[in-house]
Length: 295
Image (tube, rainbow, N blue to C red; front, side):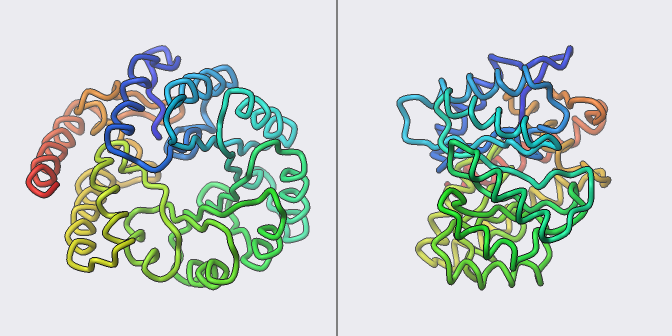
């Protein structure tokens, strides 16, 4: 989930409620806050806690699980955020490896085993080498998912060779292997991943719900139809400008054009200008019309 913010970079509470309601109406299967798309690395502890409280309260009374990102360079901070998430009613937590120092396999293993021992909620591993600058080695993941409190792994590497290694683990272990980049969702769920964590659901939750159902039913015609729209979102919204955070700039602009939040990013990131916004708005309307004819 994106994090709606105001001009002063505080949490936009009305927009956050509106966004969560939009996701609920779209019948999504879960919400993951404080991930990469949520700009977690740029948010203050106070804002993170406020978002956790608000999200948990909004989902109270539903059966929708709330996953909370707790990745941090501080082990103590990750554990504390997990404890706070549990107090608020979260379902599980998700953690990157600490992303300042390069870590070897033994250090990665020890870190996550220690974190799992100290976490009061089920823990998902999160592999995102673009930010940490190293992959979680598959053989390390194979050991980690034997820990009773480690329940799965989200991968955002987009590396086919790495994904292939994880598919082999997914077929052997009773864990949840989830894919981040939605451009890879259809292919790799069919190859053995269990699902995806799709940022595009912020905009078009019904599309990803429909794609999920088509994948479960192995309806190849529907899978292909929905996948083509996913790729259109990628091309027209995520990749419009290019650059290291183009997808997030496009997603926030699209969400703003739909009335879900303001077109604001937290420093050091910068939102697109007015011309960018107008182009994204036009593309978003086109995609929504296509979806309305399908769903």
